[in-house]
Amino acid sequence: MSDASITTTCCIAGGGPAGIMLGFLLARAGVHVTVLEKHADFFRDFRGDTIHPSTLELMHELGLLEEFLKVPHDEVRELTAQIGEARVKVADFTHLPTRCKFIALMPQWDFLDFLAKQGKRLPTFDLRMQAEAVDLIEDDGRIAGVRAQTPEGMLDIRADLVVGCDGRHSTVRERAGLDVEDLGAPIDVLWFRLSRNAADTPETFGHVEAGRMMIMLNRGDYWQCAYVIPKGGIDTVKREGLDAFRQHVLAMSPFLGDRIGELDGWDKIKLLTVAVDRLKTWHRPGLLCIGDAAHAMSPVGGVGVNLAVQDAVAAANILAQPLKERRVTAEVLAAVEARRALPMRVIQRMQVFVHNRVLTRVLTSKGRIAPPWPVKLLNRFPLLRRLPAYVIGIGVRPEHIRTPASAP
Image (cartoon, rainbow, N blue to C red; front, side):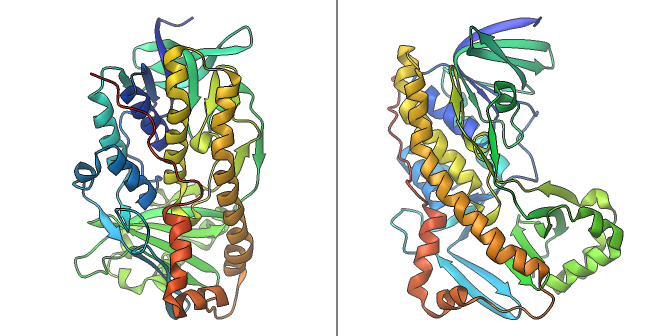
């Protein structure tokens, strides 16, 4: 039995990009929303930092862009990569039909803090930190709420609709018994940080060599590094030893030589297990899943945050009025899935293609590596760089704010 119980219109489990954005948009439309976030804050190293032009366009539509861009960030107008000895340009965002023709590199915790701050200004927005959804409440086959663990004890949140936004290891989807289709991923990622000096290059970049791949994210006073390894390869890496791993990192970025000693233990290096999967059906009566809870994405393209935000916008557009009228039917929930299934499937298909045709070959290669011919074309003909920029920066079926702001 729970120690306490509350009632709301919509209970959102998970305070990531999908959950916080959906909660904000529904509350802005006048819907009573309770958002549950299991941690005490949003600080996580394992969260994407790329805020794409499509998301920045949504900030503009909400009238928040000017304030949002005051949050410290870096702006990336071109994507570059070093493949072997060749440095190539692969995407140019400066021609996109958006107000912000760049990717904003912003720690995700700052992005979520910003959205949460906007939500807290609204009387119908209830964000509860350190509240973890651990089970679902079910009445006659319909999901009727969430049971959450809080510092004060168990809490029952009764709701007309529960939305699972609790990530790729979603408790909500597991408790709801929703079937997951695993597409597989041939890579994992080792995350670690190293100090950044003022003389270092300011740009975020990727480096590809035979058998190795690493991405470095500029976070001001330190580099957040993502070192790609074959799926399940962590035991091999550890067996070779910490010093060998440090040498692999230096082979990719020699300028880190004066600070590589900061990696003085395996506790400084975290394993991020990569998954690509999707629910066969995103909903059941009283329940909907979106974001990573509905479709876990690969880091390829850095589109996970923005796809989750697009899911949230579409869900808010479709759900706001039915929630206010208390008529959320199976057809309404199916409409959300129908709206967002195509973009998800297209992006996942592209990611699986890159996994199988590019990353697997790179990680198993033993000789010298050179840019493949499509990348050479992108580097030779600048006009072609607009295509990957559009796919990454705007994506398939971009969403727009359709929910009206409720009168105060």
